[in-house]
Image (tube, rainbow, N blue to C red; front, top):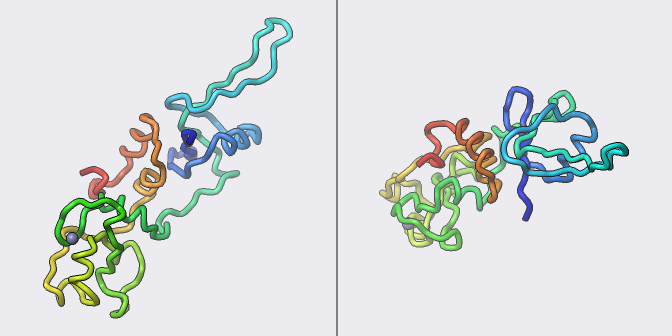
Length: 187
Ligand SMILES: [Zn+2]
């Protein structure tokens, strides 16, 4: 799997992960202002008739794109995804506080669906099968089971970190500087 490039706008607000092809398209459209960070892509052009050397362009792992021509996604409404939920919770059961493999975890509705609980980031936690079964269709208060941590919607930068398994060092530094202090990614 190739490394992805982080596209950011002119205010250095991270936008999305793009692959090499998408990066080359943006460069050829002339909407890329600059790039920085570790070299993620080396573009080879034509050969210079005088020097006989091939032109080479190194593209950094973070690409600054002109936003007037490039839409910024709204991460406040990033939909819940099972795999990302377990990552948010670091694979720790919200009730017994033990660490599990993703395959051993279940998606737990804090306010159960049978009582009107919604399938949204702020009502979901990771729970082991035993704890999920024990709690059943009850709220934590009704089941007398205490939540070890509270659910929350990941922000833009947490979401970007969770979405990419192969983040380069400079990209991670850029993103972690912008992750809020309450994020469990910091623990
Ligand atoms: Zn458990």
